[in-house]
Each structure stands twice: as C-alpha cells, then as structure tokens.
Amino acid sequence: MRRTMPVAFISKSPLSVKYYKAIVCRRREIMHELAFAQIASLRYNRNTKIFAKKKKRWGREMAVGCKIIRDFPRPARELVERFRGVATSNLVDVMGSCAAIDGALAPIGRGKLLGTAFPVRLPQGDNLMLHAAIDLAQPGDVLVIDAGGFSERAVLGELMASYCKTRGIRGIVCDGAIRDRGALAQMEDFPVYARSVTPNGPTKAGPGEIGGPVVVGGRSVRPGDIVAADEDGVVVVPMERADAVADAAHALQEKEEKILHRILQDGVFDRPWLNAQLQALGCAPSKG
Image 1: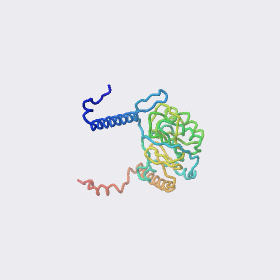
Image 2: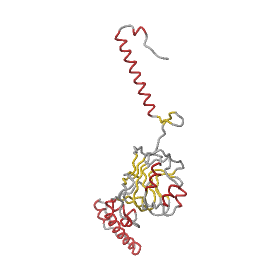
Image 3: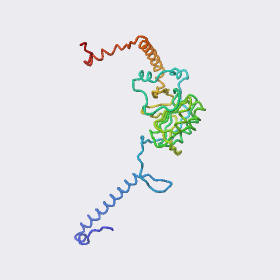
C-alpha cells in the first residue's frame, strides 16, 4: 500500500510540504538506483525473454575486439629448426629460469611441439574466430589460443584438430577448454596443450581477434614467436631473441651432456658453486 504523509503534518506550513516533496523525490531516485543495480547483476536470456542471475565464471573477463590480420612476418624455417631436440628446461634456463607458460596447460596428445605462433583471441566459450583462423594459418604454425582461461565451454575438439593437422598446423596451445580428450590423445605428432576439458560445446557468435598479440598462461605471445613444447610444458621464444636463445640453449645442452656422462661413468656430480654459496649463507658443512 502506498504510504503518504499525514494530512495534519502537511498542513502545518508550506515549508513542511516542500520538505515532504523533496523526501518523496529522493526516495524515488533511490528506488530507481536499486532497480538498475539489480538489473546489472542479471543476464538477459534471448531465448526465454527473461532475466536470470549471472553464474560465476572461471577465467578472466576480457574485452575482445573484431580483427583479422591475415599475414605477419615469420622466422625463417632454418631458425625454427634450430630448436628441434632442445629441451624446454634448457630454453627456460637460458631465458631467465621462469619463461614457461602456466603449467596448468597440460599436454594432450603425442609428440613434441615446435612451430611459429599464430595467435587467436576468443570471447569466453565462443569459437567463431577460431573457425576462421584454422583456414588462415599456414603450415608450420602453432595455434596459440587466448580463450580467457574459461573452463565451462570447449572451443575445439577432434574435428577441428584433425582439420588443422591435415593443413600442416603443428599443434595447439589453448588457454581454455577442449573436448574429445580421448581422440586427441591418440593423434600422432599433433600435441595439444589445454587448461581444462569439458564436453560442453561453444557458441559461434564472435567477435574475436586473429593474428594479434595474446596472453596465454600468463605469458605474452606475439605472432611469429617460436613455440616449443614437450612433456614439461610450453615455452615461447620471442622472434627477435631466437638466434641468441638457440645459441645459448645448445651450449647449455652440450655442457649438461658432459655433466651427465661424468655422473653415470664416475659417480661424480661437479657443482663448484655449491660450497661457496653455503659459506655465504653461513651454512658450510662442519667437519666434526
């Protein structure tokens, strides 16, 4: 029932009437603000024509544009091949010890991954632009998909992965969900790395971005960067640093092979830095 001010109170003075009207106006403003706040916390369903509470979504919310870059500079094939057979742990060691993407992106499928980054950025749970991207990627590319870490809808499965393989795409790194894990795990020489697995399918409404920089697993990836992955995880080498990183990684690998040979042959593990570091900490082993 609508509440009104008692007539006796209103009739006392014109000033009381003025204050009463101001209070009523402010009350209406507050009610409107509360109504807008309530609507903002809801999501409109175009199918049922009603509002429903928004579900909590895992992953980061993103503002995704609509852009397609069909081509971009890629490193020479000879430069990419210099990374073949180099362990990702050695690449990380020469790049600063913390250069790998988030280890939550787990390997699915067989083989080691090496190729050129072809970045794709998707809205949460939508794969419209991914369908466009698999037609534009070139042989030797690796699809690097920034799906916002969203785990409730898969953006690709067996059909799309199989098509990618026939086109010469080397593999997929997806910061989001995939499906058809069993089929993908059986694919030869086509590794897939993904944050999660779900049978839920995607929408195809867009927008999305192809061929621009993305953030995957906490690491910035630009088109043309070199992607190397093995059982340990995924490392992205910036294209402009590729030569220097390859030189340093090969030198480190040769050094470690010699260390391993001495361990296996003589049972000796040379670490000349160990005692010096312990002494610096005041923790040198005592003799007694």
